[in-house]
Image (tube, rainbow, N blue to C red; front, side, top):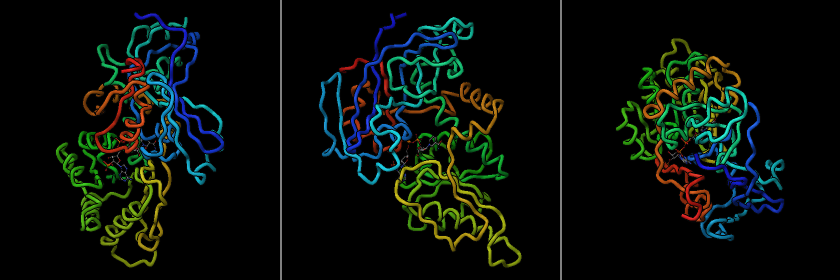
Length: 385
Ligand SMILES: NC(=O)c1ccc[n+]([C@@H]2O[C@H](COP(=O)([O-])OP(=O)(O)OC[C@H]3O[C@@H](n4cnc5c(N)ncnc54)[C@H](OP(=O)(O)O)[C@@H]3O)[C@@H](O)[C@H]2O)c1
């Protein structure tokens, strides 16, 4: 086993009071694990949209406005956050925040407790924040032990997207719905959700925004895919919702008319089955959960089109896990660990070192959050490569 250094590097994001965002590699002292803790050498961590929220703080990431200073091994990138976006970020102004929700690595040191000692040498997935870091000390409970021989890249996305995809299905079931609608459905998470629904026999209406995304999902067995760019989108959405009886949707897009179009299609489908007219529309509850903000613009809900029994509100993995209870969470984690290379597999277009993740050119690419274009940070990859 390699010797553990005294200091290591991590990606940090500092938002200054004047709106300047500064991304850099910060050096920190590697802490020795306490009794119930382990020290993980982080080998792979995905750059998810949720990491980018903290990393970029709504800054303008145009290649012409991003500025690079520092050296090849210690890059510093600066950008400007629009003044209007600073208001709800008051609590982070002046703080240098370590980034990275989840990742995978090898336990290289452990505290005295038997549970910690048992993890020495194991490959573990961790959700604990600060994962774009060469080393991370975490409590044993934050680790998911992966089967021997698991490659860190295969375990890097073991929590955020898999547990969210499973959480959406659990939410659907617990709220009494039998089918669901999902937007930005060709995302990594959407592809996982499609596989879960195929395995579990759940009807899923996949909403995408390009024909090639529809083709990608169909090639993976998706039965119902509708494309917002098609001229007959609203008719196709209604037909798909009609065919499934879906009354719940999970929307990752956020801004624009899409959530309202889904509620309208659900209402229109239910109205077709009503035997008596009501000025309030169908009494059946229609639910859209907004769980992503890929489009940061305002959501436009054309209120008159979906009766009175509906709601539109937020959904977050953390809140779901808090409410789900330990037994459910353990069951979901176990399903993920047993199917990491199949149902819950993630693909990455590029592995980057900590320094490469802060290059202007790479930022301009991965910040687009495009289909099949996820990056993997490998914190212990050669910093200058
Ligand atoms: N609430 C939670 O707890 C939670 C947990 C996990 C994930 N999430 C959310 O789940 C979503 C998917 O995550 P991921 O890691 O799977 O993403 P990903 O693999 O990076 O894929 C992003 C997808 O979004 C599409 N997209 C990007 N901008 C869009 C826009 N303005 N309008 C419509 N589609 C757009 C992309 O399509 P194009 O190729 O057309 O750009 C791509 O298919 C994200 O919004 C993430 O924040 C939420």
